Amino acid sequence: MGFADLSIAEIARDYNVPVEDVLRLCDQLAIAYKTPQTRLALEDAKAIMSELVARTDDDRPATSA
Image (spheres, rainbow, N blue to C red):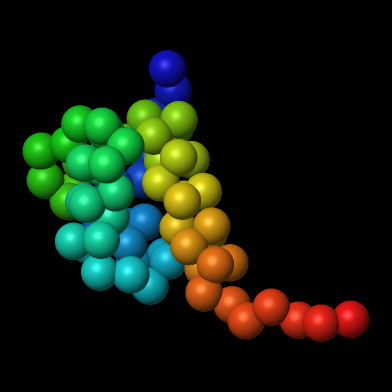
């Protein structure tokens, strides 16, 4: 398993969400961490980012054609 060289805190900053939200996501996805500075495995970082993107998409109003 490769490493993404991203920490939980960096993902929170990049996606403009509180670190606590990303930590909660880690707990929900069973991703082990010790601190917000924990470097994540590539698969774990991708799972978190995918969930954050999905939540952003869910918050957008639907457009009608």
